[in-house]
Image (cartoon, rainbow, N blue to C red; front, side, top):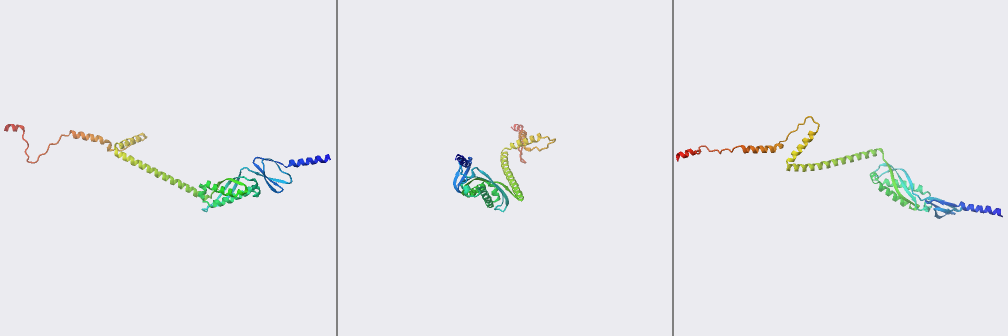
Length: 279
């Protein structure tokens, strides 16, 4: 009797211990007893009756799912190749196991088809300039459709946009033309500001003639500072205007006043001696 009891007890203990499972903090076990789901268990130590129950582990960590390059024709009929990355996590372990056969594969296929359909309705310029907007649209569409699978999509990022060589050259020419346009606009604005300043300077110089003399002397000083062997420059007459005016005033003061001219036949006045004889 004792020889039969000990092996039986050992078999029972072995059966009980063989059903123990340890789940990590980020793991959940979808528990099936006799084929029926009994919900999710974990983390920590759980018991799984052998031969009667099974489990399927599900990780709750964020998964970076790479979307392979997709051939897309944009709305403006440009053929491009685009790849992306999708960040997702399982929110409900039971739905992720029961609602879909393989949630990773299903989410990847959904992301590929959504990427092609969304970019097919987008122009190339909008894709290149408003990539963040495209990412939000992709994220909202995929997240809404994976909600029944217990999967939450946190972000979708378009990584690379591979353009045809001729389109790259066209974009390069467009960028070069845009830079030339900006340079011409900046140059025109500089000319406008310079003309306004020159007009103000001309107005000031017209009001103060001595200012042009000072500017002339400054220019002469700048020319003389250079290592030139011979410098020929005209001397404006305005430099001597003050001197000439002073000389003219002195010459007018030194010249005696002219005698008044008399008409023909008019008698000259007699001298004082003649007046005394007559007296």
